[in-house]
Length: 82
Image 1: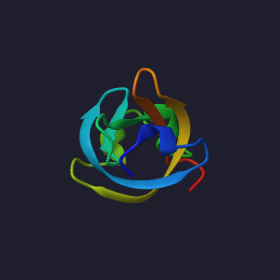
Image 2: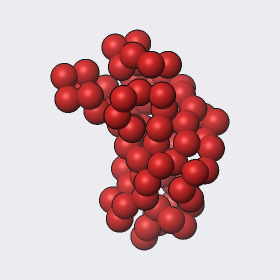
Image 3: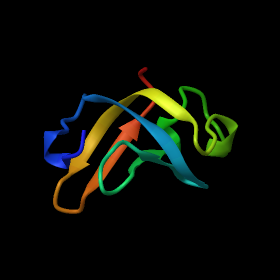
Image 4: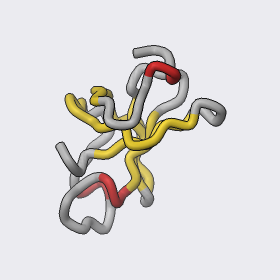
């Protein structure tokens, strides 16, 4: 997957965690910009920091696309339903 216009909400992608911040994790899903998993979309249960569940360079085989902003090049991702 290399073109953001090919992504749709509900698409399932895979990727590698590149960076972790207090508010979420950035994941390389093969686009120019990394996708972002907001902290609220990382786990079914409440977590206080993404590092509780994710680690840098961790491979995620199934990530759901929940938002695509082609103009800004931003992709919102979720691990909640998978």
